[in-house]
Length: 136
Image (cartoon, rainbow, N blue to C red; front, side, top):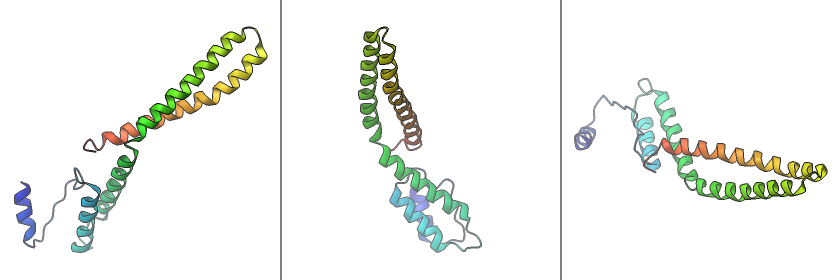
């Protein structure tokens, strides 16, 4: 089918059908396709939403590529911060009935827990983005 499509594209035609043209293309191929659509289609026939979709798809693919290595970094940050939280929990147990010390430790712990939750949210967003581009 690709060879037939290539042969078809070598001869000028009045018809070009694009069904999700950016699937399985790398960023440079998407840019080339977008340029070709812009330069060779009559403006009255061109669907500007196709160009917008191509641009958006290329941008998301670039973002996914940049974020690909972020999960390992997030995992390391989460692990280190959870160790700190665990140490604060141990310190609270050791503090026993010293409510002032326990409250101080809680104040230290709360922002760490908020940060870990934010990192888990970021991790989920990255995995969702990467799922869109399984070939990366």
